[in-house]
Image (cartoon, rainbow, N blue to C red):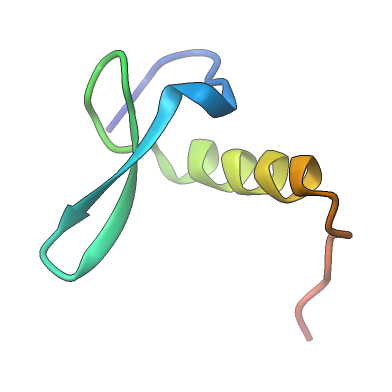
Length: 56
């Protein structure tokens, strides 16, 4: 797991592991930790201009 302190949108790439797409940090090469992946998803949705939808 990646333990980098701050991750920017342009530092993430997606790799295929088996049948799963995994967000990976370009600098260290490790998959993002769960909290990092959640924050990355929120930033990505915000940058695309979508409103944050709450799941029921």
